[in-house]
Length: 314
Length: 314
Image (cartoon, rainbow over all chains, first blue to last red; front, side, top):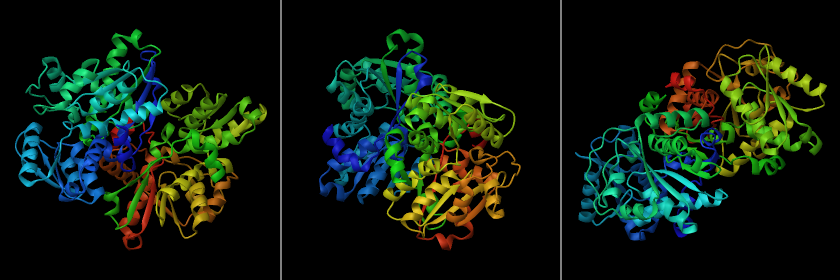
């Protein structure tokens, strides 16, 4: 993890933490927001993408890379590819947003949009990478990517004088596995809370079942955590080992959480960040006594919200 | 200036710069955004407030301070007062937003709301400070405050490999005087462009007249730069010496600029930051040839926008 940090340090921003008095009052905890929405490219995904890109051999880097993503990871890989002066292809699912596709193309990276959801575009990207002898970058199913996301934990440990509980949105599990893995290596008593949208809870249910399930998702404000998980994902076992509790939040919860953060802290967050805040608010309502006087970190994982969505939230 | 920087460094955030491809394409310039909207308290005002607070004698600090502000400066002073563990009173005008008043009170600082506009609340605050033997903090009419704002220039000079043009919103003139003063001390060829809202252009007209004018303002999205200027303000002469060009922008220009930044860069900005972006866009439209291949910095001075205003802008 520290090796990953040393590698990616010049390419990412160390993001600040901010105290949230308004959230703290809900439970009596001291609440700190990790402002990963201030990260370059607007989300934490750059950490994992750079970690993986920099772990490739010079030959692999030079030949170019293949990735699959409906959004933030694709933009992060494109940014990394541009920074390192190499080439890339990103496979996106049928419903990928035009704005995200533009953001990838703008960085000189080829986009291939095909039928199907994100699990299918991951499969197509893997096949394309094998057929063409190119390195494949998974958004979560890769130890180098997980390690890169974990650098958020490295920064948190340095920035805060002790952490008791961390609220993190759960999608493919790369972010939570990386952060939990590092923080628990320092102190295994840190409580890790995984927060998922009721409308898309594939990893949430998969952990409960002990295997990766194929479940449909409904539309959710948290597009960053939505969709299926690749069979054999290493994050399933990491989550089982590292996550202490799992919460589900509703779309209304996510909306309220986003309004609270945007209104009080004047920072932009996307739905996935709202999921983590909503998870904390649920605990603050139902088990405030367990939170009182504890030090709580909430990861605001990204800022990439489409303008019509933002307008709808407000 | 460097002394001011060394003093305030532990109390503020060094804010990042971000390249803006979308703005660059409008003129052929290389455009860099100074993300002062990421500053603690959501605006650059904290720099000037901390600079002044830390320049007081220990006795002055301990007795407490008085400030006048309708918004960001009041919140910044309150934050500084809280950080240093002292006391403060902030005078706000009749039309100050309830959210800003809450943000000041939340930090344990007394708020006095009185009739009249911000020039009047500045006069009342000055009188109160004299009557009670307390230090007065002006939002712009103080060399220590101007010097504090100038630390943005110190960071820009370190972060960028050369700067040709800087676009800055003009209110009382503290921000532009500080940044221009420092950058021109390094290289007097740096072009400083002051951008004002057509709806509130007191300093803009005052500089043209050579004296502080008493002019009415209309409502503007740029509440951070709106309102009158104190008679005898040191910033009038500083602007006359340091600012190369003055631009006026319409409310529609400000709105379009805000939408562009929020939509493309996924960061929240308030109207005053939109004014600087709108100034650049005006130049990009009318004199792109003077901007092509130059290095342009635009200061996104703050993020503190009210939710209904944000909704209206989107």
